[in-house]
Length: 317
Image (cartoon, rainbow, N blue to C red):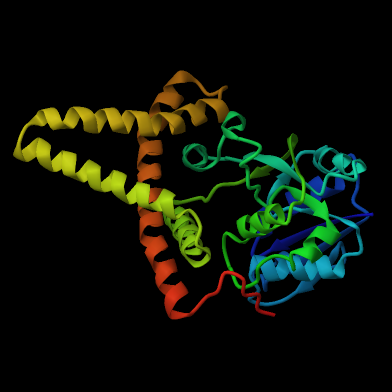
């Protein structure tokens, strides 16, 4: 039996499309369970009477997912985020691999559901293209994931002490326990980026704060601080010593940003050349904005970890 579970909070703008996508799946889940964190925009009212929906005001995603899975009856659990869009074959392709008893976790892929030029540029700054994925190292997002119920039980569910980056910790614990992952790039969900710069900054600030809480990616964050410090030093030297110091600065910038420019062409290859060209400066600005948000959020997460004595293995009820 396959159960589809999802959490939502104030997703009224996208929720009907999401419900339609579930209805139009070529393989229907035997049950669907939603947990609403206390929406105030009519999301719960839209769900009422259609699908099983529980309400737990103020819960984080981990709490919501664990509650939904506890309520679900399936021995295979498919997970996606409320407000995403689902390819019509998503569930069928994602769960077909469980015919092999040696497969415990199947991760799908996600693509941008960008509706404005800003969202396209933000997609390029935040959403990888398929060729960037290294299957052995890939830690999948729970916006496109399925697993056997038993493995969820064995790792004690999603980490309820962690409000963001919870799916990465869940992945890490599954891998440490020796469960077998399968990457299925054809099981696709479409995820809409944030609609404005303020929401994006907050999103990446929270991601980085979660990294600090969970002791994730220390080396990666140190490299980011070092790179930006070096860049500022090169700018200083260009004004105080010689403009030639700008040459390594611009070379480094070109190398760094090229990946994100290439993503735009991968995500939106049908766009005309003038639009692709116009995207480059905005992509650069968004990448820097995201990096600043991370550099602000990470030390805050570490500080909160120390002062609030957050423990990596702690699971609050």
